[in-house]
Length: 212
Image 1 (cartoon, rainbow, N blue to C red):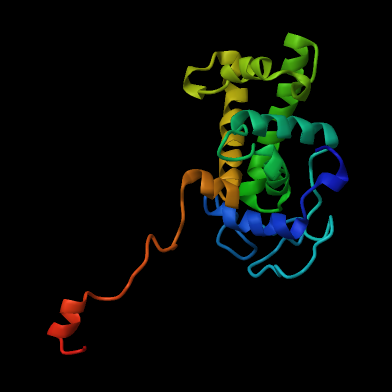
Image 2 (cartoon, rainbow, N blue to C red):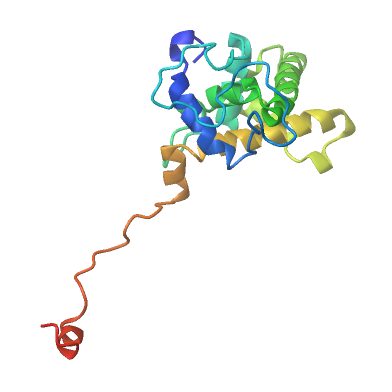
């Protein structure tokens, strides 16, 4: 999933961002109180979701191929495939995270250095411990590294900052995954779907009301 042709459609990614923002942290749009004018034009108040967006039309993406591979591997470690649903990476959650940290809004911009520095740390730590990149490690070795980051209050001092990265990446992964169709099915959420059939009021009630 490292090639340009594997990237998800930008219009689909934009729709995804708008949906997931409510579950993660709503980015302030231009003109909102306290918001600074973004460097890129962004999508403003009313994005045109019928338009096909090309790279750079909204904002340039951030991840290089290596960062994208690392992010995809970490997404799959956090939410792996099981008998109920596919893994996070196969749903392009890492592309959603790339869109999120690339967006020119304050809340997204705040996440950008956290994610980029955390991915760099993950690569360096993987090389230090195992002499390989994170995406090339087997799952037990990936998990060994992430076990040191999984709960910031109990992390050793050397892992406190990486643990903050892991917590935010985990939130973004969950927010992205569980706002996909597959993710909502995995939660068992059915929305306003009917739970059964309705055959109308009982006949005795119809007779009582004189409506038969």
